[in-house]
Each structure stands twice: as C-alpha cells, then as structure tokens.
Amino acid sequence: MFIRSERLFLRPAWPEDRTDFEALGSNLRWPEANLTEPRLPRLLVTLPGAAGSRIIGMAGLCTGGPAAEEEAPELACWIAPVWRGRGFGGEAARALLPLARTLGHRRIIAFPRSGDRSSLRMLEKAGFRAIARPEAAGLTTLLGAQAHVIDLMPPVDCDGPEDGGFEPMRRAA
Image 1 (cartoon, helix red, strand yellow):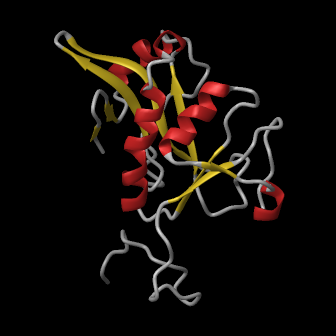
Image 2 (cartoon, rainbow, N blue to C red):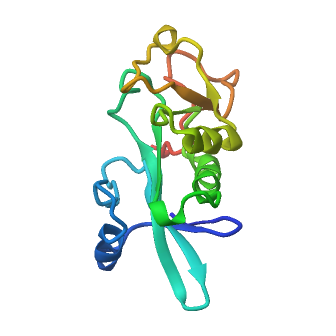
Image 3 (cartoon, rainbow, N blue to C red):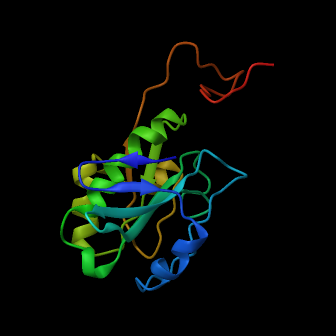
C-alpha cells in the first residue's frame, strides 16, 4: 500500500531501509509488512525530495495495546525527533485514516503519551476526540494516557449481529 499526501509519501518498509530507519534513533520495532493481517498496515513515512526520499518516521495500525479488548485498532505514529514540530505526524495520521476506512475499520483509537502536547495537537488536527471515561468504553489507559478516538463510518442498515458487521475485503465464495 502506498499513500501520497501533500508533503509525504507513506510506503511499506523494504529490507534496504532498515539501516536508515534505525539511524533515526527509534526504539520501535522494524515495521515489517504484516502478512497475516493485511488490515493492519505499518508504513514508513518518507519526505520526498529532489535527491530522493528521506525516512522520517513510521505510521500504522496495530492491536494488542491498551485497546486490545476493543475491536478498533490503535493508531501508531512516530516521527523522528529532528523532524518533529513541522506537522508531519498529523499529516501522516490524516493520510492513514482513509486507508483504514477502506480496509473496513469503523473506529481508530490512539493513546498519546501523557503530557505530550504535540501528540495531542496532532490527534486533534486529525479529528480524534478524547474519551471522557475510557473505562466506560471498555478501554484501559496506558501510563495515564487519555484515550482518543475517531469514528470513520457509522454502522449501516445491513450490518446485523448475525454477520459480524461490514467487511469490504470479504471474498466471494
């Protein structure tokens, strides 16, 4: 999957990118393609230029974090410290949301680091809203982080409990 935004290009990680990614100083796991769950893309965030593209971070969807009980995946977005403060995180998050909707996700959850104002601004600009009481939504908090959500699409009439909901990626038998 490839995504082009106004200034960024989000793309899968290739083996030859590993050294450049690790040089950014991230303690994040290498964003290898998740072949077992194609609905959870993990993409490198690159900044195209006349001399090629620079890797400046990563963005993707994941499960197993604080929102593990919820069916909604969690947004993971990390921009290298040298590239922060320029709106790249928000742009990457906004670029990922239409793909998440296309993949059939109705809601995305995010947990910004507690006290990190730039993460909060990024989520607000992308359209996320804070959940007043995360425990009421079946969510736990991570290190005091406030849960934020964005609803991508409302349920439609044909979604019933018998079919588990809308799945646009379902293959014909």
